[in-house]
Image (tube, rainbow, N blue to C red; front, side):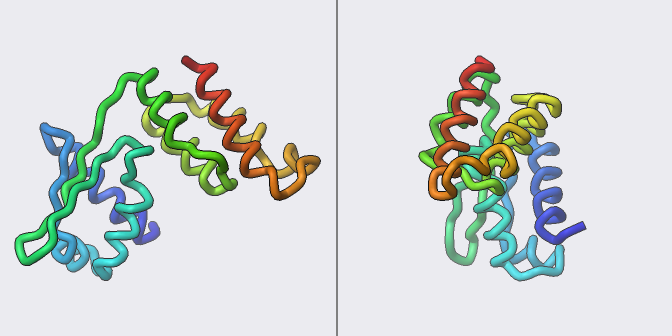
Length: 150
């Protein structure tokens, strides 16, 4: 298991155990427990616990500082609209994969729908589109597909 996956799993377990869907961590303590540097904790939080993925992250610096991660529970329609509004003008293939994986894990879409979306946005399908427009096309297409699921 990759270190970033282990950090994510640890934080997810903390969220699952919490009655308020909140995990409060001491970055240095978590890094020491997992045998990594604190910047790796920062990387995982900034890439895997974003508002687009349904999380609010607050931090307080200093000796008694902490990072508080709160999972926001939205109904399916609200979650889809939140995702659509957060996509922006372009998505690269990695962004699409992460977005689809997050939608599946959040049960916004099922695995079959995720596979269909992925195949529609794949490089072979987009090869006729000039490279400088592909990321814009991906963003527009995935927005429309998600909106159609409402």
